[in-house]
Length: 468
Image (tube, rainbow, N blue to C red; front, side, top):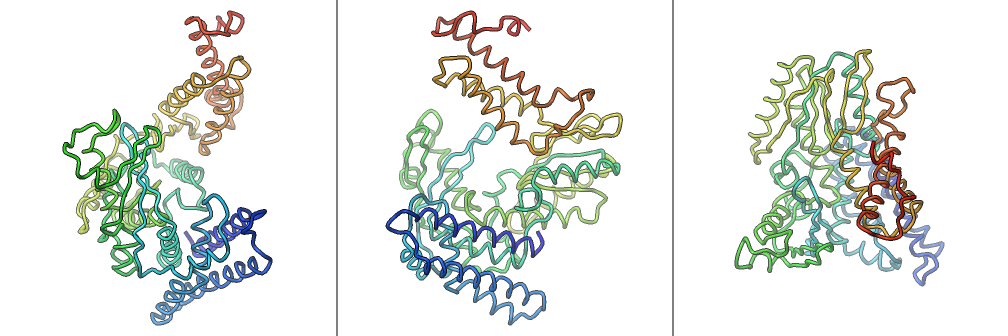
């Protein structure tokens, strides 16, 4: 990420947060006055000038000026106020201007606030990840740290999750370009337990004090943790989790105490998934290691947080690159990062990355579409929505199905959907998705009708489609 892009990202984020806070306070007793909005806008300008001053000092290579600019950015009221406003942006309901000021005045990067961390389970493959919600003041602290890092070390230029870098669309455009230049051999890799595996030592070279790394980037000791799963109604403190009698004791059909202990330990030891600055730090660490291991090799590469893709002109070159990257990550002084990779693929037969299938066809064009697993998940989730709905007419079921199908269709920005009618892959388009909708709706109605469920009749069922 370039400096200008980072500046624009922070500026846009701050501006949006101010607008949202003003909107949330409107028509309430906490509605901002014209003067209060002016104060927020003035603080926004001061904060922006501080960012520019830090970057200018770095460009001039003057250590004392850099140190002074960093100190201003991390200690000024304007910077703290903008961090607090952003930290409350997604918080529902109004927050009085005086309260924002009080929080900003009490905010410090030299203090740990011991706010409770809430762990929420997020499905991931056959298991789940501990994604956390932390307190408002920790979030504000992390926003200040992230601003500093964006101005000093930037972000990973090879990662598609960096804001403003084009996302999946840009990543696959780069892959297509590489394929056109003869990079036919590809491998998809991922760093196992990437966030939980990172330790303070992996941040060597970052412009952060040891105290900030240990207490703001990572979680300090004695911060209380709660595990909450709203789906199952579980709400447990870390004290209950660690003082249970039996690791295998089932908390519910989905969890044992042993599993919960393992996940809570991950939260305490590694980067917290859900923290504001965690993605930027993780991307930077991985990007640095990718550059060291692969930068001088005849390969192309990119990442999507903990997922890595590497392309080469020959199978042997790709094997050597994978071996070099695996060895480097496994021997990091701060602790090993475990790299898992699938088999090497030739795009002339099809390769896979991020759930997409990439194929170089005989005419030289490259086609990207969702892989079979994504289509299967679409069908499964579509059925679940239909079976759990309260629809009593076919048109209502179709409305539910089409709504989800359009959402799913639009969630694949890298999918090549602009194909001619004569194209052999033209079926992998909205027409194909629409046919899946019709089939799924028809099957659900038929199954419920066969079970004697009302109000379905034979007239609601397309028996020809069912037979096909």
